[in-house]
Image (cartoon, rainbow, N blue to C red; front, side, top):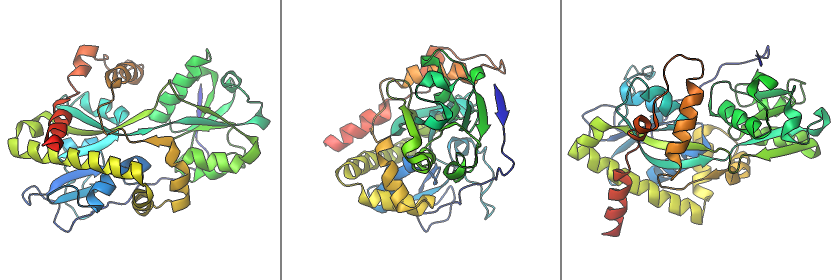
Amino acid sequence: MRFTAPARLLAGCAAALSLAGAAWAQDDGALRVTGNTSTIELAPVLLAIDQGLYDGPVMLKNGGVPNLFGLAAPATDGVPVEADVATNAETQALRVSADNPDLRIIMTVSEGLYRIVASRQAGIETLADLEGKRVGTIPNTSSQYFLERMLRTAGLTIEDVEVVRLFPMDMYRTAFADGQVDAITIWEPGAEYSWRALGDDAVEFDGHGVYRELFNLNTTAQALADPDMRAKIVRFVVALIEASEMLADDPARAQELVADSSGYDLDDVKGTWIHHAYPAELVPDLLDVLEDEEAWLTRDGSREPRTREQLAELIDPSIMEEARALMAE
């Protein structure tokens, strides 16, 4: 396998977002939430805050699970972005929890339904045809993990393809036309950009039954041991469940919020909506996914993979149980 970075690779990051007026501090009583504000997966969080479904002050800023442990860079205003709860794909939770076993996964907010988009003109009609081809993605992320799982179903490995690093997301609009790739896989809307760019030349391989990204809500065992913080987190989970039910009935407002938060065109958000699911539960195969992906993340020998029993300690189903009980009252 070769990794290729196109010459016009650009750096990018999402701007910080605050959806409440209070200062980002530890003593103002607000529940501090971090999540990647450029993702469509964040929709239930955005809708819950927008609709006032959480009965208390809440703050949202761009970030992820590193903010639970003070690992991320400080915000532009100099205030460290430390979170009480954080959303992220399971890939990042596994990475961070290796040195911070206090992390707890308490809910699956969204599922990213990944796909490979390829060009028929490049001679690709089946997954096996990816052998020797250039595949655009972001290495060492959930998108590469998905690629490797898909290749495995065709008897191939990552060594059988040339991985081309593509970032930021807009590169997926032009990567085929520029002759950089023969196929791509990335979270939305990047895959949709490529699908539209190829038109009738596009062929798609979806990951149904192979892998989908699990965009989870995470916190820490320390936060859950604090009765007041635990009560806040339970109420926030209730708000996310209610938001998920609302967007299932009518996604229009959630789509608008995602467009505003991410900067994507509203039509692009709507066009990729079918490639996401919002289960509002702890998905039953979460531990299976963690176990397989843990082996993938440690394939370089940098550390020993954790056992299934150790990984199970990262999952705390009690918050979902308490949230459901609270909703039933």
